[in-house]
Length: 466
Image (cartoon, rainbow, N blue to C red; front, side, top):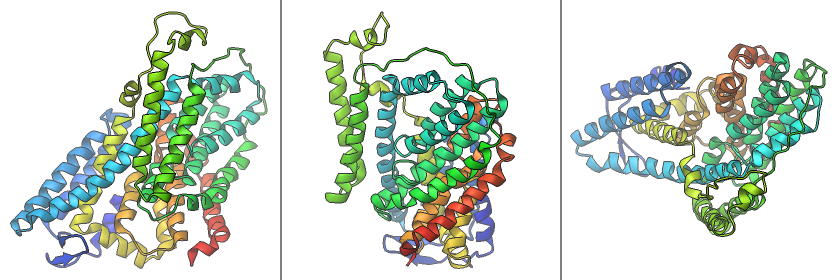
């Protein structure tokens, strides 16, 4: 996003360095200074390295963390020279608090997902789908529909990987089917994550910011469904009408799996209740829910741990259930990448570039055009910095427009295989079968679903645009 945003910003550079104040702290306009230009260069270089991760094998968190530290060091240096020593400190503390809340929220969610994975919940679901002997077209729809409805609770990356494993197990030699099914899964997982506060980091950011209420997100259900169904319906006719060979292998869940699913739903309920009724940050409810899992893990360790493997038909050494092992397996690279993005974008906002971007996009183009553009940009750049930039700009918009940008940022990544974590992960999982160009071939169809979902949202939720 920022490669293009900075071109827009360059046309609106303000003269000289001046003092500006907002409600929180005194701020210097550094957009036309060496600090501003250096910070832009650092962020662009860092993000180019992020986009090249597949080729360089350099973890995406490393360049953005380094860029964030240098950007804020430069900002603090200039502020100290203007005797505003504490201004940069207050600003970075505000950014760090936002990150901490989101990081801990995601950490709890990832821990539950890892616990369910260890209890073989996802393996059992995959085994059930394979044993049922569905035809390729039926499996195309089933994996898409399941991806659409699982991703609002689990993250879209986990959901996409699970469904892709089913596709590869059943139709691994049928390149056409695997390619189309993977495209469908990516679109469905991204669309499903767009109508739930828990479905994607971007929706979580908007909810925790207090801009859109928890239940209001579900107004996006119909537009999100349209985003998935339009391309899926067209691709359906290209899926081979065949029935693959299936296996009778059954995978049983380990002891406590169903109770962990219930505890996860209870944790989500706790987070929503804390936020809606007690006006506490949702992360407090999620951390309370982590205690549910910790106590249940203690119960599993103390009550006949051998049953964990005996019930699954396995005998041998037992590894006791340990919540902290599940925490250790969280996607730490993603969480640290998120830190680097939040702090880097926050630094660019402190310099003054996001204010310029807000003027060029939301004032000159108008909110609807700007929000549609956000979705297109998220197909090229990860939607996390895109949405955080919009939240930092905080333009004056109706709830309908905030839902629109939530929708476009979530589903816009489906336009290209590199536009979302789900797409990038599936290119690795189905290497050689689902590729950038196989996805690109169907991008016009996906774009049709993208535009249809926007139109449906503006029609169905017209009352929210007032």
